[in-house]
Structures are given as C-alpha cells and as structure tokens.
Length: 196
Image 1 (cartoon, rainbow, N blue to C red):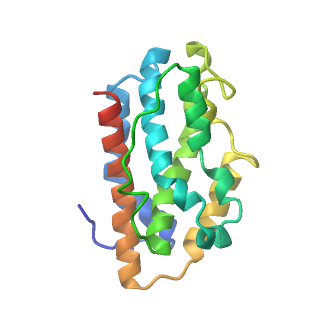
Image 2 (cartoon, one colour):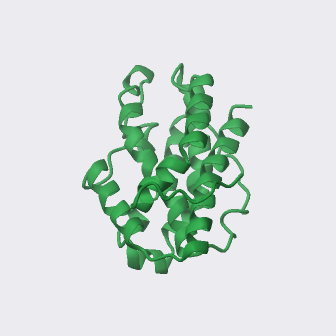
C-alpha cells in the first residue's frame, strides 16, 4: 500500500506523520488488543516484536553515510537493550529474517524507517510508567523503553531536523513516504507473529 505524496505540510517529518496515521493507528489498536501490560509474560511478546524491528534497523543505525547526518545514530539503536530485556523476561530471541537488513535503501528511504523507530521513543515514556506494576524498569526487562541520553524530545527534534533538511527529488520523496508506511506494516507483522 502506497500513499500519494502529501504536500499539505512543508516539513517532511509532518508529512510522514500524516501519511502514516492510518498504519500507526492500526498498530496501536493491535497492541492494545493483545494487552501486553497484563503480565510480564504478555509484555515479553511485545519486547520480542521490538527486538525484531530493531534488528531490522540495526544496519541502518550503523550505516556510515547516515552517521554523517546523525552522528549519534549508533547509540540510538535499541537492539542490545531488547536482547537484555528478553533475557530478563526469560524469553528466547525470536528468529528474524534479513529481508529488511539486506534491502538497499536510499537516504530518504532509510530515514523514513528510522523515523518510525525514533518516533516510537516518544510513546515509550508512557509505556515506561506502566512497568513498575509488572516489576520491570529501565534497568530490568524494559531497558528498550529507557529515556535516551539527552532526553526524548531533544533526540526527536535533532532527528527530525536532519530528516527535514535532507534534499530529495520527487521520486526519492515518494519512496521515503512508501517506506515509512512499510515500516509500520513491518512492525505490525512482527507484533502479529510474536503474539500468535
């Protein structure tokens, strides 16, 4: 599913937010339907999906060309925290595939995938507040939800400033928009698989 380019907002970050509203809402509703905060065991399914998505993006977070744009990009990746969280929750690492890891992406496409991952950190603040009821915290079982160094808002502002400033032609813009939607769809697949 690809959406036509939305020119209703001059900032790319806002356009991506607009065009991903539907898949984002679908994902939110899917998460709620699985009640991942009912128990540590239920939460472990959610963490497994997070791990798979972060694993998908691990190469992008360590890509030298992208690091030139976002110098702290490697530190932003949460795959290692998700691995530790799954160990805390006594859940084996789910096996991932390499279809995203091996995909060749242009800068705009890669930033669109990272847009979805980085944006999820804003919502993680609310999720982290629910962890004490499960006996979990940003140092046990929910590390991947921890506040990034420098704060969530500042990290997001720095990332979207780069996203908004990169020059893309019309085709690159279209591909970036399609990949932002694809990123939400991919995470949805991970959620469905991990809660199956």
